[in-house]
Image (cartoon, rainbow over all chains, first blue to last red; front, side, top):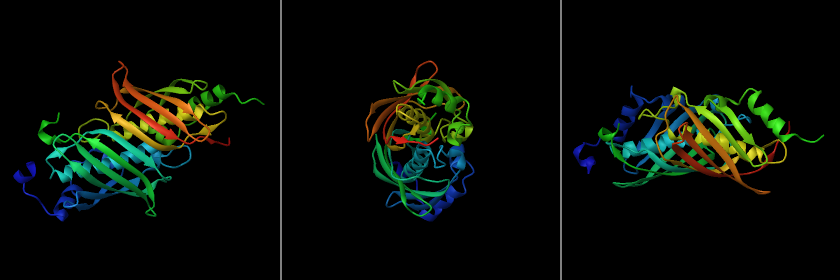
Length: 151
Length: 144
């Protein structure tokens, strides 16, 4: 496994690496994303978001697709961390259940790996509003790819 | 007065200031049929939707599909209405480019009293299928 070739770092170090990264993709900034918690043994992460009113639908709540964007952001990062930053995993399919409205502002997502195999990865994530109420839940599948084979 | 569904939606989708999420996605109405329950629109994603691979992050792809699918579910109802999404599944067939004009189509495939079922497709202008989705929603009349 690739994990054996690359020395593991502590959860705190992994967290710091992401929080201090200067190579953040534009989507992470757009969503106001901040990695808040890493648990490598449990293959679980938590992300905080500051969701812009730019993503509001006619009712003033966040349009569902953008809630999926928060969930996708967390699940994709979860694969990268679970692979010890050796792999990324383009999403094949994602299913989101929308339980209640999310208003612009604070939100958080907890994502975990269900299985990280050689040819497929299975993830799930839950999105909570500022009052810690469950807003949406998603499951997704992805294909793990080595970083260097991308592009 | 008889509610003119076509005129209502034509006015709402072309003359009114779009909701902010709609504007972010570069939405531009192409055509719609309130009786058959379908909507076609063009989208152009801004640079802010870019993932580490240089393409669109998946959630923004779902957002474009959600726009046309929710609209299809809304216009398929009798009066002014919305169709809040309960559940949506998106399949990402190919990387979705940023800054390119894309075509979205949403259809209402079943109009029930308590539930609506929709599906959607996102293609490049040359017809290449980039993503597809299905969703279930609730019909919800709206006051205007």
